[in-house]
Image (cartoon, rainbow, N blue to C red; front, side):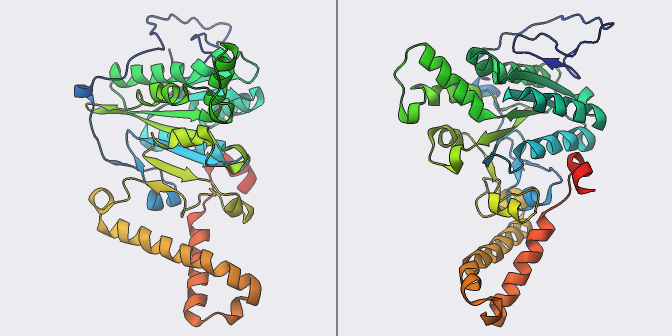
Length: 334
């Protein structure tokens, strides 16, 4: 019943056809405890996305939590849509999408695009739009996570949970906290921000044999990474993918910043020595190119030594190689 349908926070189906008869046989509470310690599995295995810059420089952990950081308009939602497409087509996986504080237009576009791509039948979507009450928006990720837990624990499947946008979850919590009359903490956020985030993130985990891998878009207010909302999220993540406005301005998509993005499994023990050495060499070339940009701006590339010229040319080729066209953006890129 769940797959192929769009739900609100209470589990009501929003895209039910007039002639469709749906019988709900089971309902779970959205406030649940995380799996017991003895049921957890520390499964360190790379999750292949097929996106070059991610697989090479910031590999994702199967059953891990990945943060997509970036300001407005740098491509977070497009990257999530591409991941849904690739998981459904390449891995035959089940995806659950939580639209937290989504614009109604964006949500409607996403549903239409997924139906066109033929991946809607393998995905469950939960939406709490911008015009919903803050209490509703605060619970949307919990509803989606409960569905993901059902697929993992009852249907014994590996699940991908997409949350767009986890910042709006924090924002809704702040509004609820204000309505309850709590004293705000730093930058006006709720005093229980860390506790609220932890109760959600601790449930996203691998149990014996099956996993929930979570990809969370995180809006960074005014591109300020010291803001308590993104800073609190960092503690829970296995990998971070930062989308850069500078790279997007060059027309390179996905606009992943390879020097700022991190992964705990970019280690010879997990990805192999050859992968690790290649990734480090690529990062070294890109880092040196970044250092040379100020010199190039002052005196021009012709004044550089031969070795530095070679480095700059290599870096430009690497940047172009790491960009790629997406299925979901085909109508824009051809």
